[in-house]
Amino acid sequence: MVEVRAYKMADVAAMAGVWNEVVRDGIAFPREDELDEAGAAEFFGSQTHCGVVIEGGRVLGLYILHPNNVGRCGHIANASYAVSSAARGKGVGRALVEDSMARGKEHGFRVLQFNAVVATNAGARPLYEKLGFVQLGTIPGGFRMPDGSYADICPYYHEL
Image (cartoon, rainbow, N blue to C red; front, side, top):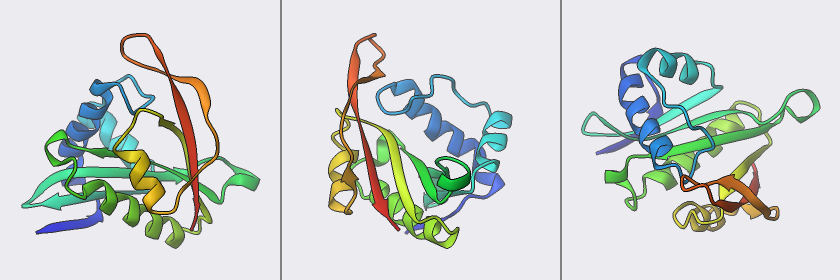
């Protein structure tokens, strides 16, 4: 049975594994450095909220939620999602996004904004649009791909 819940310290090693898989793929996250377990504990612990999807005791995916900016823009949240390659296409991403929207609202955020959705991300973009996110435009060549070429990025937002 699939469960979406706040992460626990016991999840951190598995979360780092899923996160690092997306980092290594190099086609969705701006980050280039992987997290070791200590770095992962610090990184995930510094977020406003981290959620995980668990099935049979295994972490299938996770998200981080935090302010997109400070001060007068601190009511806008940002989130990043990581789904293990073995779990993609099975609704894990949708569960993560929906949970992040609910938790964002609980934490007092009014908007959820994605700054850098890679235009070629054929899994995420249709999901975001199906959930009511609005694309704000396109930033040409905003993401450097692993081969050194550049892909467009598409910022999105959704009121919470």
